[in-house]
Image 1 (cartoon, one colour):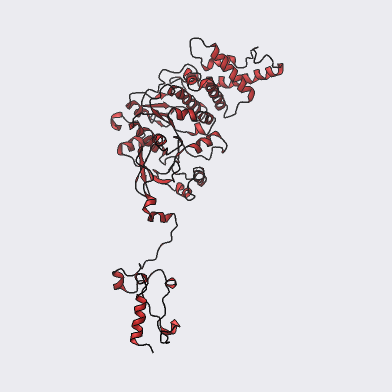
Image 2: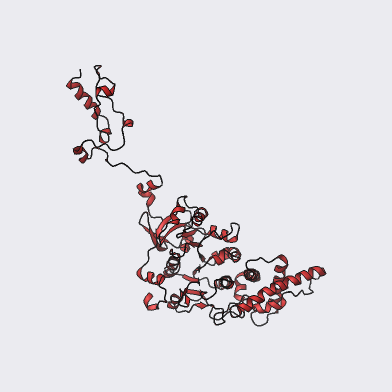
Length: 491
């Protein structure tokens, strides 16, 4: 028989268990269930084993529970290691520092995201190895608003900065950046196909100053390829084009040669030391190759005479704080847009080579034309020159699945160290972003379901962050209106 003293002694021992009493209350088990005996050999209270007790609920006495002695009565929710990172405040600190310009707000930590690719590239130690930027997203997800605020308007507030934009979005008959350019005292450089706009010369001496004659040959090759629907030139055609360009440059007297000056030299096989040893058949093949290129360029001039046929217009200038190549009135189909982008890029490199007073952010709206087509070879070939001239290229595009894996454009994308991905509603596009930019596997699903104005942000070797783009009221007007805004309304 168990005496009262034995029972009290057992209870005292149970309550003496360290810490356990705060989580698991002592329980007396009936003798017929316990199967154990007390010190006197009688069956009675059983030993409590912590690992045999349930985790929740453990509130058996309401009064004690109110004083906090027992574990919560609510069952816990299942979680994962990644979700549990929020329990460690060190892991949800600000994803970025405070240098650069404000980009938005981190959804997890609710802290400010500050970043500027030029500032990050010039920092000590460097936060990014390349100042280039990729911005992707579905139509209407917010990528254009992000680009205008974070890579054009806000960086212009920094000292020693300027911007160049290839402006493709039409607003009331002109590019969407037009009035912002006018605020800085300049007019946008407007391109049309009816002869009333600006002319860009493929053979402008400014291009030669930046990349030499080889750069002009490369540009002419790319333009010919674009005019052919991305069909590359063969070896004979490349040689015929190279010879015609060198002969044209040598013939120029007192003025800059233009594309029309090249045409008579295409297909012309001169009896000089380079071709004197060629057989009759080889000369004939070179002649035919030159004619093939000539007919392509002749068709390009016929279609876009006022755009490409002549010396570069005097209005093409980079002396302003913000320069806009307004290509909004050029047709979406055909070679006009990528040709103007390619020529403008090469002309800009030549101009910046003699004007190194500022770091330049170059925005390519519809950037697929530059990294998804033949022009990617120009960007790739001039990457080192661009960095030396202080250029940060921002490529804005819808998706990356159309870019071949082995193309120069893919190399450009992989080299970019600042990545902004807005919603990609198609699973294959979201998966492409996750794999290409090294996001965590679960990020692909997040990309599919991002709300408007939300994006995945990654720079350098830092992990990606889910960011909400925050705009001021005047920035909302600047990025959302369908009508041109007066300068007084914006600023």
